[in-house]
Length: 115
Image (cartoon, rainbow, N blue to C red; front, side, top):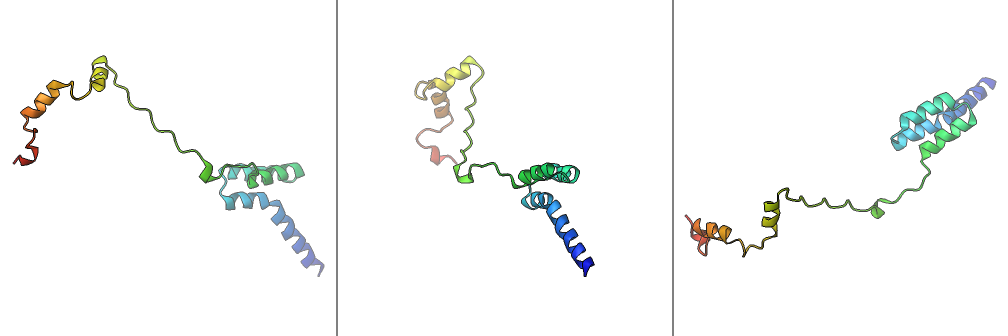
């Protein structure tokens, strides 16, 4: 009967000793390997075991997903040359050369009648 008690105590002690490693693996922590190594190497000290447990539980508060900021929109690509910048600033009605080329291609009023 004493042997069953010794085995039970050993099983409970092993479960408590490896609890930080199991918690880190189940929760899918990014630093799970660090937690396991800390638990194995320094878990025999109470401080090492507590540090591994705190790392596994990750007790620092986090912002919920619904409170996270949306990513900032990318900045517009700026033209590199002065002429490209000027073309971008000109309104379409000032660009008579583009309008004339558009009319020459037959894209005037009967653009839908092209065959």
